[in-house]
Length: 309
Image 1: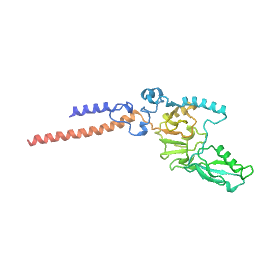
Image 2 (image 1 turned 90 degrees about the vertical axis):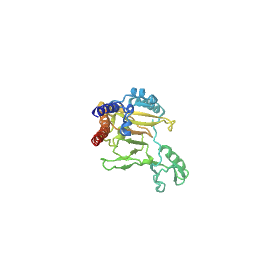
Image 3 (image 1 turned 180 degrees about the vertical axis):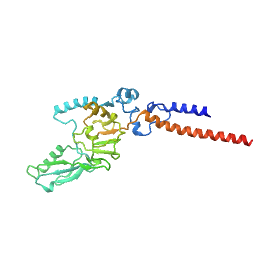
Image 4 (image 1 turned 135 degrees about the vertical axis):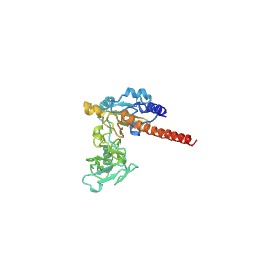
C-alpha cells in the first residue's frame, strides 16, 4: 500500500507541473479567470511580447507594448497638429448629462440626459440630434437654428460629471453615469464590477487608475488597454500592455499612455507559479487522502475476511 501511494504521489506531483505555465498544465489550471487572463505567464515579471507571439501567433500585430504605442501616438499627434485637430475628439455619448445654455434666455437654458435615440426635444428646434456630435458641432448647429428667432444667439454646451463614492474606498471620483461613459475599468479593482469615466481628451492610464483603488493582488506589470479600431470597431481591436512597475520604479513615463474614447482598461490578477503549486498541492493532498482511506478500508476488509475464514 505504501509503495502504491508513494508512486501515486510522485505521479500527481509530476502532473501538477511544478511551475509550468497554466496553459501547459496536465492536472489543473489557474483557479480563476483573472489569473488565466495573464496570457499564461507567471506575473510579477516584465511582459515578454516576443514570447507571447511565439506561443500565440494569432496575437501578432494585435498586442503591443506601451512604448510601441507611444511611438505610434506621437506620429498621429504630429499629423493631427498639422491639420489643426485633436488626436481624439470628445463626442457626446448616449446617457450623458448635458446643459444647453443661452445667456439671457432662461427658457432656452435646459438640462438633458441624452436618451438611447440620441435625440432630445429643444424649443424652436423640436427634435435635436445630440449623441455623436462634438460640443462645437452642437453649438454651431443650435446657433444657426436660433438665429431665425434671436439676434446673434450665443449657445454654451456643458457636459456634467457626477461625484460618485464607493463604500470602503477613500475619496471619490468624477464619473459620468455608466450609460454615458467612454472609458471603462474592469478586473482587479475595489470598485463594483466595473467603473466608468467620460472621455474629455485629458485622460491617461495613471489618471484613471488613480481613482480606481487597486488592491494588493492587482498585477501592475500587465495592465491592458483594449482599443477598438476606429474604422472597423466591431471586428478589429488592439491590446496595449502597460507596465506600471516601470512607470513608478524606473520613471518610464511611456507606460502612462493617453487614453481614447471607448477604451477598456483591464487589470489582471497577480499570481506566481509558487502560489499555483501550493494550490495544486492542496488538491493532490485531498486526492491522496482519499486513496489512503480507500487502501485502509480495503486492508481492514481483507483482514476481517481472513479472521472470519
